[in-house]
Image (cartoon, rainbow, N blue to C red; front, side, top):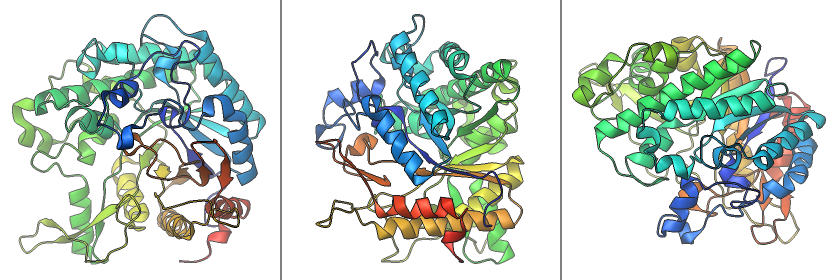
Length: 452
């Protein structure tokens, strides 16, 4: 058996990417609603107004998950669907949707993994300063309390924030994602600190409600892999993976060390200087709440070797190296070295909360959707994750991104990551070959993966 007993064979989605119903049943606007309507921000002017219409078709989608055999489903809550203004009034119709969703998952034998925030920040709170407002972490804690009070009797696994690197940096530094701001380094790091405080306060809310709850987050895992197994290159990759270099705000340790070790890395202060956020008494203790697992989203990695000066050197990929439709490098070893290095540093069980690839998929003349590249990609990555488990990493679960083709943020409907094909005109769902393959993997508890 490649994976341990009780392993989660899951899939993951996000509310704005699949739900649609953007203005139904009292839902408020999010920054993604705002970003899409600005124009020239999303491919072909598309939006998540309808997306996969999951809000109305969730029972059909759960039936597909059940047919595949998925035993865990990671979904997110739309904050403005539940609290249209971000704080204060609770929208019962919105909250009731997630009630029904969780009940239907449990009835299908699928364990719900709830992500509190996957980027659809309330527009009304953005107008009050958003993540720059010092009250933002308290707003998030109040929202978390509403969700946990309603769903905590049935949801046992929680993630606070999805990829804070993305919604802070792509949303507030480069302007590529909602809300589309291009702020200075000082303001970006302030937003980072407030988001980390929100993580900690939400974890406190969850723990206060249920001592048995399993709590984590789902940050980006920017993986560095050694070029070969030479000890000096392994050490170079490990050092590079947790270093803060220059003005690199994506650095793993900048986000993960505060959550788990209770401090920002020393080289962050050395590199960012006065731009580092003001840290008040108790902040780091609030951020560093005890976590039960290390969730991480990893799609690709980069190779590193020891340079002539003894320092890590990033190696270029050779011409013609494999890439996905999204133009991301195909590096299955990222799911070995990433979990290995993260487990060594943070001493927590590892769950791959997202892994997958965009492919060029369509319904063929025979009615099927044939995606052999995705099958090979997932197989290679899962085998590397199993290898990490054999080498001592406590591996607990693997969530394919994603269940079905959906609204891929600024890329609109151009990128297809799903195991299920979505026709965005008719909303017809067609299981791809990868879904049938994953069904076999799950049924055989990983044995269908074969050897490396």
